[in-house]
Length: 407
Image: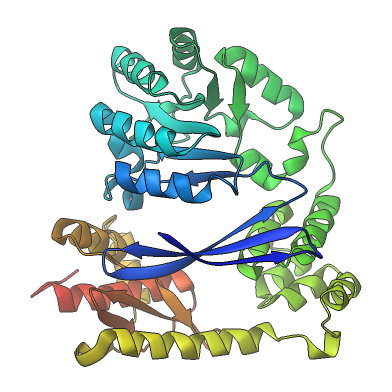
């Protein structure tokens, strides 16, 4: 991971850094933005490599307020890579990762874990973590195999909080938090130093207000103003607004779902005037606005050029593969092994780094492409959703990478 570009936007008090990340023989860009006026930004990473943890810690120390290492994520994409909850049963590796990061990072260093099936083993793990020099431990009160429908064991979190001298942050009760008062109840019941809430506040961030929640309309407008002001990514902004909005079956909700760029998102909530004002502050006249569709088209063109260069003699492996009927068949027989999970398992097994999926098209459907070990795999069939387009290109990859593969 290398810092390849850094720029300062004085108008918006923003430091923008672009990191070049190498995963095996694949590369990707990650953009990190820090605001001079609010530096309380914590970067969370997933890793199974102490050396890489140390490199990242040293690289971002001057640009974030804290670094958190996720050791509790139960998702396949994390566990199959040896990260997240896969580390819970590898206390020696956990200790090496945290000590390596601590040696390079002088600010707040934390990690997040889940419970082990045996309480005594969890206590032992937490004590080892505390001895590495981390500043706090976040604990989700469920095991790797449990999901939100299972009980969040606050009594175990309380036991862990008493077992160590550093702060313990309780997590896992988001479904029970609907107000600031509910957060206080969660804190009291957990015996922890503080609580971490995700899903509830993703739907309504004003849960943090002691004075009470704000209406969703105000939440959306305030969020959009900040997104426009700081020139946020459209997809991420739309994703957040959808969470704030809730039920999208209404006419306004359908208009929100149909938006394809930031301007259309602004039009849904009558924010065009503010958007124009912010463009002018950047020295861009509204009628000269760089169209997001044009940028997307240019990005797609660059993507295909890059993929062609990377593929070299191997070329692009493409098939006219429609995933929709396959997905319906898998769902009908309750087969949880999707092309995405099977491909990830194959890459981990073979030690191959897989790049993320890139998409092209929109109006007439999405097509996905993925580069694996220097070869590009894609389906030429347009799909209604990016999810199906992603599965389609991964299925093409599996058919070419694994002889005789069938699903």
